[in-house]
Image 1 (cartoon, rainbow, N blue to C red):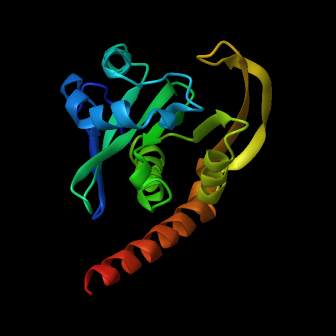
Image 2 (cartoon, rainbow, N blue to C red):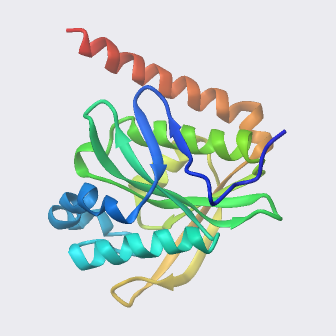
Length: 212
């Protein structure tokens, strides 16, 4: 029987290539290089973490949201490079409705376009559906963020629609947000096996390359 999400518990989600653990205030130094050197990471983000003060506030809000039982944020550690790669989180967690969103995901440039994201999403989705009894996982993105949308579709997400002028961006303009989702029955029917196969295929190629 699935357990409910325990906000007091220090979850660790991992496989051979990536580890996700709860984010802490002292992860500041682990993420600071991206904050200082790669401001373009937050081009489509509603909450920026570019610069020391912004990153500090970003972490404080993430930790507080967990304390308030609204969100559960993870820091992402890439085992292949032995380095921290970025962050992701569960948010808009609705235990009574057995639903949540996955988002606030960003990675350093060297990790973008690799298999890191699919590894992370497989761990998060497996945990959500198989461990804590979630029945609907939602994803949202700026409708202009083609790369992010393509990545979500490749997971097996279904596009549900676009919310026009949905929310404010940091620059004061308004954002159209695309809504995608994965339902538990689709996860169990096809998506889990398909995503697992994709991840394992690329991970196997990476392991083979390391032998030479």
